[in-house]
Image (cartoon, rainbow, N blue to C red; front, top):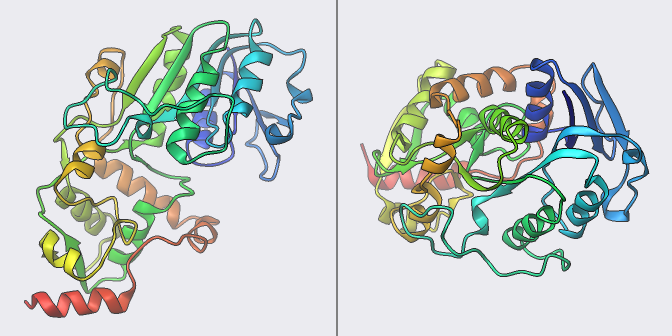
Length: 326
């Protein structure tokens, strides 16, 4: 099996490369070459924004997986170039392509944002939807992998990392409630494994890729962080109205958490039955948290954390904790 990962140096791309290697595949990555490729991986170097695709000339692959998130024309260029030279094209898209707000339980049939595939860059949703349209110009089976919230090792985003860092520091931790509010997420390794399997099976069309609705809660997530870090942290739950009154921003200052309402439903209440029927399996959230914590303790992870801007300022947390008392 020959696999080409367009990207392949961080987060989902890194997971794709590792999964393909574990399957015994002959793996190539195409990117700017700013990070060293893993052992046994062929590094192909070029700049997609500049149209520099010469390194892709002349070769063939069974599956191509594309993680691109910027200007959609870059996807159009590679889809056109690789038509007839690859067995399947899998584009890692996002649930952000759906029109907002998508109600709880929405599936792949819900309307998407309207964009022109040849224009860009726009915003994240527009780029991803444009990337989908561009990927569909590939002359062969094309999969649109609409991922929800992605967590796991090798992340260059930092949502779970922030919670692990904060909770590992111990003490009283502001926990956004209600504790039983649901969350949906997918481990990047589960996403990678499904994408490769889908390409090999020549699946086609769009699939929502995230954990089942209602499987996990915010309490499950934060308690898993406490357990993984062996911390003495005490979770202090605050009602959404308290957090709102303090001017704290959901999702960014308190990563992953969204208060009850239409934004929460659009992000954390997505139907995934189609993907599950096509083989999607999502590991337990505790394993994702534990493995991410182990990765953060390894050499190199602290450098990634230093570039992250997510999370709540300590003085803001202290004020809210004081206001809710004991």
